[in-house]
Length: 247
Image 1 (cartoon, one colour):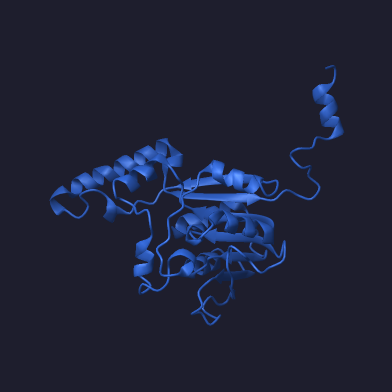
Image 2: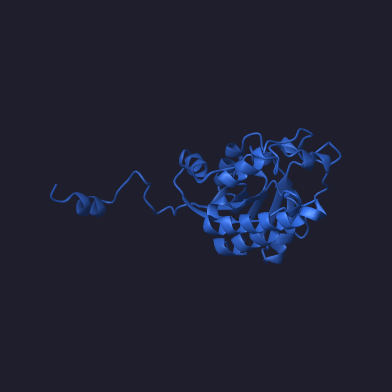
């Protein structure tokens, strides 16, 4: 996942010296952003156990992603990696990030694809993220960092577009990838049938190569329009005249 994170950071073109707020952040964010050379980063989350220096050299801020305390446009960019599905309202958190970002928002979340729905129905991937709570002594890691396992909200492109369009104009860029948790493949734990697991892996890789959107890695970069751009419901006089001249 870290390699996909780093790859999309590069593709998004976010300048490395710009101010960045990471919502629902953690060590993976710190390590990836350091590795990519970003310098002005604030990592935020709802973890009351932190002292504030855990993400050095970056700053840390105790923040509820669904109600950020920062002013509009306080940061150049906002980033969230696998954190929106820990919110009680992922849509509200995304809009809060959009509000405090001056230039754009980069989000990494699961995609609601046919392949993922099939994996859920067959028990290959969970519907609720109980493992995250288990790994935090059954006290943290769930919805809003509580002991309650969070529902894994998976997005579609249409949901992203409707959520942002309801709030403000935008441009959105989508990115896709694949990471196969081999231990969850059928027969992966059976040495005598492990060749079937390898075959299943190749089948998944081939299908996602042919149908890119079926991969389980998904990211979207929401670019805010410049102040000089027209709202989408407006047309310039010259554009209007050229389109409707002679009607």
